[in-house]
Image 1: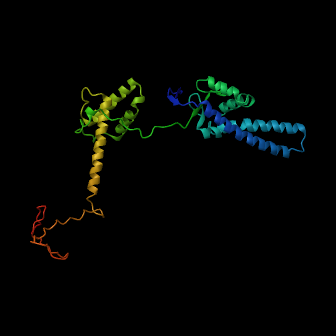
Image 2: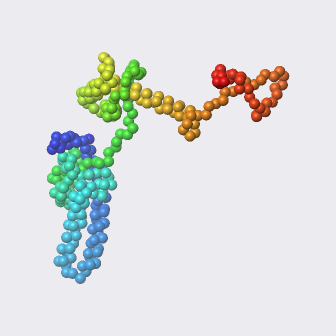
Image 3: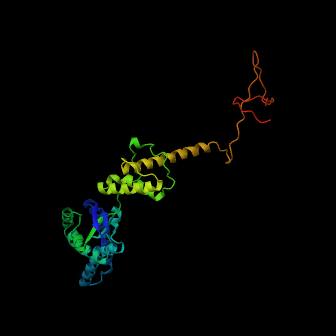
Length: 302
């Protein structure tokens, strides 16, 4: 990660492209450009067969300046620093302050690229990129540009760290109904990234979030409890309540009938008559004694 400061004093964290990815992007661009140049040269050779030598040489020079030099400059200008090779490798050319490049930046890079990429077969560009701390070639130094990575790995699904065991369940009576969603989101983002923050910055941020949470709940921060541990314990309590509420809803949904109404009442089992000896089979449609109390002890009203 490389920190760039813009004109508005905003620090940008950019990832400069390494030499392998930049070399691959240059190779892709050169293959496409030279393939187009060869095709155009063949067409011009066939079309200018009847012209004299001077005219053919002038067209050859013009085609060389337009295709291997002019086309990359035009593509980088119109796409704001993304050629075909850079698009495939997830790279982009930006200014030193992180802004998009313009025609003058692309022109300087393209003009220097003729010397350090085409005439020296990339040797000058590789040496300059290895020596530079940001991996810049000579064209980037003169143009004031930088090639950065656009596709960077992102952290997804990072869990919230659990609270200390001695704080689990301590805030079970805390009223969390007044805590807004944006505060919960800020607390969760802090807990998942507090290991990446500076110690002083992380402590001040946790103290501020803990004060805001205590003001919303109406209960001050317990003495002797670190703010980060307090935030983790309260978030854990909220997750526990959400889990209980979800399981409770699932259990209540099990008692609902098929069309959304109440589930049909279960008829209590009726006692079977005791017969001495071999029990006699009772038919299914035989009337049952409704006056006998069920096994549960509940008697229907008269």
